Image 1 (cartoon, rainbow, N blue to C red):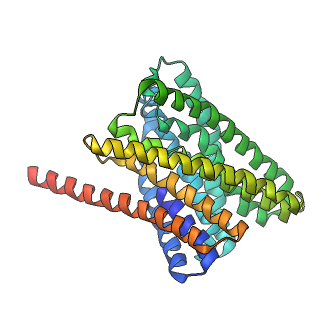
Image 2 (tube, rainbow, N blue to C red; image 1 turned 180 degrees about the vertical axis):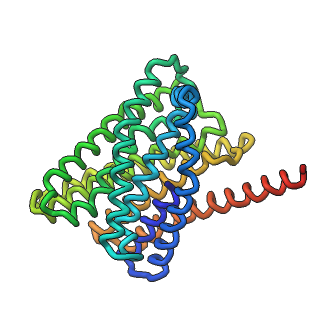
Image 3 (tube, helix red, strand yellow; image 1 turned 90 degrees about the vertical axis):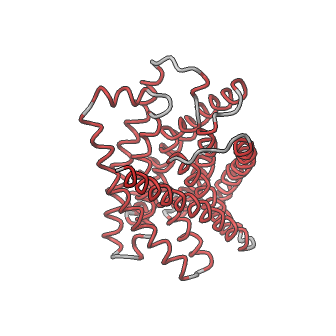
Length: 335
């Protein structure tokens, strides 16, 4: 998710400043993200062979929500292929790949989010077990309307139906986000700070803030292009996106303070959960870039957001590679 989103971030920034290096970076990360997805998918599908173990995993407060990264990852790839993909191959072929990712991702998201909610509601979960990862199964629905935009542009005759579906998914994600986010707030307020290993999940609320801003802007723009929405109403999307980004920036400060506390009190062990920081930060950077374009403000704002998003991706990606190499060397030495 983080790598695919970073590809989209570089492409959005390229559209703003027209620097070739950003385009090539976006294309490279698109292919890297796709290759990683191909390698990881079998790990998800193997779980289907052991239904009982899968049921227990879904009901696990710490791990069940993380399974939603499969459909969310598919939808992020759909977004990247819909925007960056046409730069690497014929547009129809790129949109065909994006459409396939979109259909599968949207169907799995639509099935898994209520399934997870149903399972978790039948299990006695201590409030202390609630964490930012719980936002993934419900908020992944916000990715669907963004992934639909290139398809809407390709098939303008179907725009009314597709835009209505997009707003439907936007409603699912945004309203359920408020419910689950409330649980997270109550957990923090009554149970204290998250344990150090779970602190990276505290950044996940930035994802819905950023993705909602992107989604509302893109849907309104598509509606204007299709003649379904008056251009003057685009200001509504701008206002709502700005409010969403404002919340995201506030939460980033809060999460940063808590992360600094955890680092000072013994540090945060590195694990794959650190990737939970990348996608939220990159999503917020994309939303800021889009607002910068709409308001035609100083380009340094967009470039700063892009630098932060890319920097977070580089840090986590590099740390992951170093950790994998160290683990392999340790196994080789033990043998």
